[in-house]
Length: 193
Image (cartoon, rainbow, N blue to C red):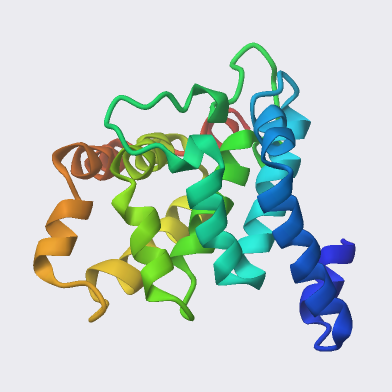
């Protein structure tokens, strides 16, 4: 809550918060990776929320996250992102899920209007982007709507991306994940309530 207050504060508190978040990302890489690898859902959700806020406050932090945090620095197609999947045995409400925190993290990059290069950097991480889209069919309506609207506005019809870049972003796997939305019947929580 305090960070959101600081985001809206144009005074010196915002600058000191950005400096503190830069320090967190650049000097506490091991702690961040431990929290992302934690068996506790709350640890993963908390650190993803902090990283999302950090990216929205300062694009340089977003670049540092993609460069320094191991799971986001990966670039091979066979990367393992299993630490970003909710445990099916635990009944975590969607609002408190790792998936929703991860979606907000990715959207923090995609909604960034200040730095097109940062937006392109997250999309160039093909395996991460494909993993992000894979879970879309299980998300709730508001999340699906936000993701599709964001991708349409900030990638598909954006003049910042040329046709070859769009073809590299929307691979066969990415398109298959989007096509699964034609079979979407709502998230598990929406269909059971």
